[in-house]
Length: 189
Image (cartoon, rainbow, N blue to C red):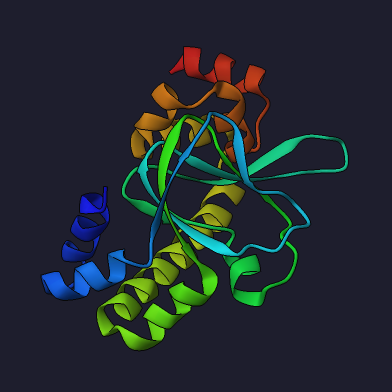
């Protein structure tokens, strides 16, 4: 149950088995159903999730009822509504498992206790924050200047599993396109 989490840390930092066991002891296992909400807009995020199996989607819904996906977290990744978790203010997005998932959950207090007391955990946390910042910047600056067809090519090149595991509606909501436009553009490539 904790092997993937332990391998995640081993791949990113030098860490002994005793420290890995200590870190793992703070995580609880949770199975979710398809489309199960982990967080709803307006709630305060209290947990960080590690995905053993499945996928977590972070998204919001605008005034017109249209979904905009911010990110997908697949196997061997951490995911949460980071702003709400850090600031303890209401979330402006939803977190949902989009397929049956197996997650390891740690509550906020325990998570930040590990950040403060386990140097390897703090190091990995910094890596997570840095990667989140980089991905956010790439998306903002890359997607602002891309034509719709270039966005689809980007998915085909950089996120191929999205096209096999996610619905057109979800991928389109990440790209800022309609599902119909995405389908039309995929057929042209």
